Structures are given as structure tokens and as C-alpha cells.
Length: 263
Ligand SMILES: NC(=O)c1ccc[n+]([C@@H]2O[C@H](COP(=O)([O-])OP(=O)(O)OC[C@H]3O[C@@H](n4cnc5c(N)ncnc54)[C@H](OP(=O)(O)O)[C@@H]3O)[C@@H](O)[C@H]2O)c1
Image (cartoon, rainbow, N blue to C red; front, top):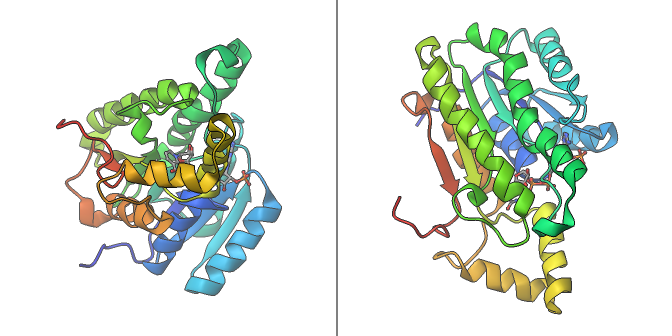
């Protein structure tokens, strides 16, 4: 199947490693020109070099903290300066800290709100003028399976990501008539450095090992394992692509069947 992505332009935030990096990699393999972002220029440059070496594609690295209100405009300006437009947007950043309800004060909730929710709002707002000019405009917000089923010790993610799901669905309804598609991808447990860190914390709390925690978590999925970042990225690239032209307002779990409810 031709995904119809050749020569399109994508902006992928939170992309020096993990899910964002894997998605940038798959987009480049499809002939997309890709802007990658994260907070550290050093990490981004290494990531860009690797992406170019492995795919032969065109990559621009732009640093900036997605929790900073000024960053989205900068990312869009640089994207347009370099590639002349924007077709595909993956809104993503690092996750909030783990912890239970009583470990977080108002300041911690507010900080997480900026990262987990407002970053999506601001980036989509900044991108809309460029997306309106595209013939393949598509936005994919990265949220979490925690929006379906809370994850132990992740109260910030469990609570705030529901806002991003509501935002995504609302935008699909509000802007469908302008032919801009909005979907969200809900990763389950995918083997990235963040997950290794989270399982490390669990191992400390439970007096076990990371390997033991990995085994327990993998057993939660009918497939008996966690996902690879590449498996996440392939689903993300399909949803972003013109091949998914009649899919909007979809909240897609990529969780190996871990979420057990019928609806
Ligand atoms: N992996 C999973 O199983 C899973 C499951 C559910 C949800 N998620 C969510 O999906 C997102 C990506 O997860 P991941 O596993 O790929 O995480 P990760 O391995 O920690 O990678 C996060 C990426 O985002 C960048 N980043 C972090 N904070 C940023 C910020 N404020 N502004 C811009 N870039 C930032 C990081 O680079 P710098 O350090 O250079 O900024 C890095 O490139 C997270 O929000 C996570 O909570 C992941």
C-alpha cells in the first residue's frame, strides 16, 4: 500500500529518542521531510545524524522545551523556513514524573499541565495556519493507554492526558470541514528509556528487579510482551498518512491488547 507520504513535511516533537525518534525514522523511510525537536540540541544533533545515516532523508533539528509557551511558534517558523510548509504534526514530549496523589503539590500539577496538556494546545494553534494550506493535513497527539485505564503510581498522566484526548476529539469535530484530521495514539507499554526508568522505580518500591517488573508488565498483554518503538511508529505513521484519509477523531490504543474492556 502506498501511504501517500512522499515529499510531505512533518514536525515531530520529543524526538531525540523513544517514540518520537522511532516515528521520525519511519516517516523518513516513507520519503517525508522531517523536523525533530527536543530540549537538548546535543541529543538532537546525534539523533539527526543517526536518522540521516540510516534513511538518507532530510532532517532539521530544532531545540526547545515543549512546556515553554514560546517554543511552538519557533518550531513552526523554522519548519516553514526550511521546507516551505507543514503537512503532518506529531505532538509529543516527555512524560510527567511518576508518583501517587499525595506526593504532588499545586506547583507540580501546574508544571505537568503545561507539559502534558498545554504543549499540545499551543503547538496545534501555532501549526493551524500552515496545516490549512496543506492537502494532507493531519495531527496526531501522543497520549497514553492511561486515558482508558489508569496506571499505578502515574496520577499526573492518568488525570491530565484525558484533557488531550478531549482536545483531539473536539478538534476532529470542529475542523473536519477544513479537511484537517485529528487523531490520538495511546501507547501501552513500549520499550523506551522512559519505561526502563519507570520500571526501575517500581523495582525499588516492590524490592524486585527491573527484569521482574518487565516480566509482570509484559504478562498484562495478551501478546505476552511489550511493544517495540518501531511497532508504535508504524501505527503512528499510518494514522498521519493520507492512506488514513477517512480516519479522524480516533483514539487508537497500541497496547498489544492490554486494555481489556469491550469499548
Ligand atoms: N513508552 C511508553 O510505553 C509510553 C506509554 C504511554 C505513554 N507514553 C508517553 O509518550 C511520550 C513519549 O514517551 P517515550 O517513552 O518516548 O519517552 P522518552 O524515552 O522519555 O523520550 C522522550 C523524548 O521527548 C523529549 N522531551 C522530554 N521532555 C521534553 C520537553 N519538555 N520538550 C521537548 N522535548 C522533550 C526527550 O528529549 P530531551 O530530553 O532532549 O528533551 C526525548 O527525546 C511520553 O509523554 C510518555 O509519557 C509512553
